[in-house]
Length: 189
Image (cartoon, rainbow, N blue to C red; front, side, top):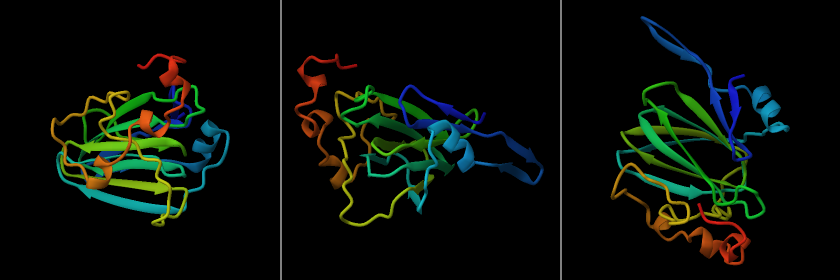
């Protein structure tokens, strides 16, 4: 099956073969039925977005209240997904992926509501993502600092280009001060 689960519930990796010839290539990137089987529910995607960034740009961690299906169509990005759901058994855990034109196969990620999505561009990059909700200025992003020491992501650039809004995001500890993880309930990884 082209959809693989990960240790973080709701984070799926979608792998499809690429068929190429002298004209170029064809690749299917997802089927809703396969995502539904892996999730145990049918995801609803309501809005498509396309982001373009130059090398060294870092965006995130963003955890809007909806599912996301992400794909790098051009270029290469280092993606980090953090579980910021306070009731999750994998709260504070991070999974990383290289998406796009990196060596190997192309994958698409399904990022469930409550997981925080972030990426850092390695090259010029086009990032396409379908989401399960409509964006408005009032959306609660539940964002977390990109350089949160508890998440400890080894970003591929030393001095990324980060927006003022992303520089102002709280750490996971600041956002969830009373979480048992910070009171010795679970060791920080």
